[in-house]
Length: 336
Image (cartoon, rainbow, N blue to C red):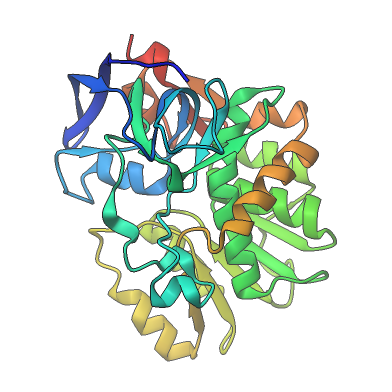
């Protein structure tokens, strides 16, 4: 254990719509149950993007949870994490004692928003409570680790909606979550008929090449057993609802905070749809599965689906037009 008295930290704070301010502060040695993490890479999630565009106006805010970092110091009570290890975020605090934790629904922990961290992933360092962290093995390409947490959300959603072999699935949106659904359904569950509606043709072509999915066309299937909306747009969600058969199931993964989404309720009622809104990543085992799946089934060729940025504004501003499916920030270089 290294005794770090203090570190010069830099945090990218979102202070207004499309405006980051760099906050410089001294980070002290982690307390007893905390770990000091040097952030290496951090992915942009739908919630981050909604805040950046001004749909979630909770400013100022520290963003970024799809991170991978290196442990540089640990508190005296920390036993299962050591200096030099790579760690990722669980995103959830799980107290283990509340009603939901005892019902195997710890992602709904009643203390989930307790925020036991000094700041989040768009920064150089942070002190983070051990309950948020999962140690991982070193990967061939370290930015892949930023896919583990969002993949655990995909695994949770897939269990929640009970996706099986031979299912006809329509995925609307080929960004990070849409891409990870293609990965999980194609490589892990297998024998699922996957159709993707994605307006970015370069991104769609990548998905077709990597996961053998079909491009959406009218009347491609008589019906879809399940529609998954990952578009993060009102128009994409409307497309998904319009293509849902009466009394069928739609799984909504989009972040549409601040939008008028009353049309969702109207469509759910009109068609008697079963609307599912999986929250976060479910039980801890999903995170462990995601870690193993990325290590075993993600290939070197798949790294072509990832775009690394060294400028935080460029990463956010070019997110939609980028031909790659996942945008990840090299935070040490971006904040140097």
